[in-house]
Image (cartoon, rainbow, N blue to C red; front, top):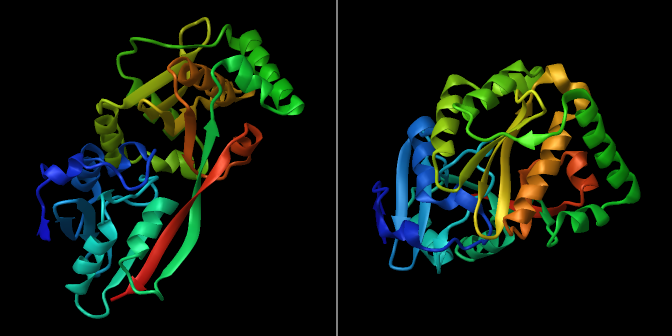
Length: 298
């Protein structure tokens, strides 16, 4: 076992223990998160077949790199990470707390295999995902009659108010548009986009898997924005916002309509809303993917 702080380590090329987890276990994401929000001691734990990206906070607790608010999935990389975790935990001082959150079932089972039997393993969150059909008409047909009618009604209402909705291309600063819409929102959403998070989002938008989409009507003025990640199997909707001035035109739901179309056209099999149990996700046919947290002490 090797414990280090080298972000160029070969272990980051290993496959994640839990599939369909997007960029969240990749070096490109984790290094950027650490650069903006990491405090305490970084511990990249690696052997010939697995890697764990861990950190020890100033109060001594151990967890995966990436906080719950910004990191939707955690998973070790490679094979045999449970045994690797057992070896690492055995070196920690007695009484050290650990908390490994946002684990899909495959990752939770593998890591728990290396911990004591009495370690707590509970579901604490869920991601919500839709299995996409081959065409958009098939997606609409899979909705309930009420929801299909409602989605079409909102699409027509947007058209009546703002013109035909479409995804904009070639906008100079799409992340800036997303940030501005966030800060126009009320309550917690309006307070979410701090300067540090804005800087982080700008770096995420530069990742190869990232895409930032803006929605406009006939005037070509953005009224909704989303940042997500796309790979050869899935589209992951990471964050979104809309202009509250145009709330009556349902720009958020119309943006989902366009993103569903885009994901299907690109061949995606999954549309992943990531964390959050908002009712609209269930109405659109999403199913929960349970996420677990392992907690205990050495």
